[in-house]
Image (cartoon, rainbow, N blue to C red; front, side):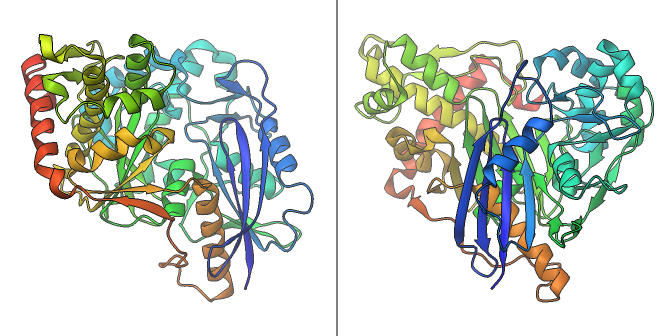
Length: 479
């Protein structure tokens, strides 16, 4: 038996799990918040190291042979030629870069050109867009930038003692906007298009490769983004789809090949195992529930859920298109939400409450259908996020999605995925594991929900939603 650790550096905290290499059993855990100051979109990377040190205190890493690193995606860490940070890391969605995103789309010739080039269309969150913002807004800092890293790249580099060689993994690279999951190569011309000059980019290493070994002999695996690490920690395979319920929503599937989508609705990500994670995002998920709860004067989503279950499937004809912030899937950035089917008998709080849940889940069903339409197999849908625990979500989702729904028990899946990657790299280095086959850890404990006899009813509700969507936004998915 060996011992490995996985650390997940999220936007707000660091979590560390220490695991058995053979079974994946969690032996010890650590946690520490990030000591963040200033703007939420500008973060000194040293805060990540301070948090890591606090989380690893008390001998947590004693006996550990390898470490894997997961970290927040889309964080851009610009370095100068000496390896010092040029400015604080640019993290999160960073709405400052919205104009820069539109500039980049136009500069390359439109959304289809970007989708074909790197499998995604510039958004404010992507590192390539932040480079464009940097060049336009902070030209002196842009001129000093000589090396580009992401959060997990920077942490791995620090753990290894800042060597000359800098690395990343294909999962993290696929979220930059200047690396293609389809070709497995950087598009250096897109970096220059955004920043104005060439820079050094980290070497993309394989899923089971080690980034290096510390002077103390501790192996550090490739690292990856938190989405890819969580998928690995959940033990997802082909046929598995993750529906993430945050303020916005995302649908992500394991698929054997990259999917290039001319409409830009699919973001072609790579995973941490050599497979792919095509992803589709909606702008409105839990924010639609919160807006409805506020409208009805309810204190929380749990109360909204209880109220919704007093209604019946179809919400007595009420249909909510939850496009409260515009929408990305379909691409309707300037639209608003729609409430259709108002009749005297439907104008009751419980029907509006249920329409909010059905509208949110039907919107995610649209995203799911985008993937199905490209040949992605959907056997199981994993529901993630705090809202996945709501009884109304669990009651409605299986029939609307037309698939088995799995609600994993809460756990640090990104950290577990990072630990699994570390165990894989350690096993390969010792000659006990195949570099093509990750360690067979037990999957996540979960509640399993079947559509059962409600499937036909759920599909009728879905068709009612689609009918309203087509009447209100005809051809939205053909644009």
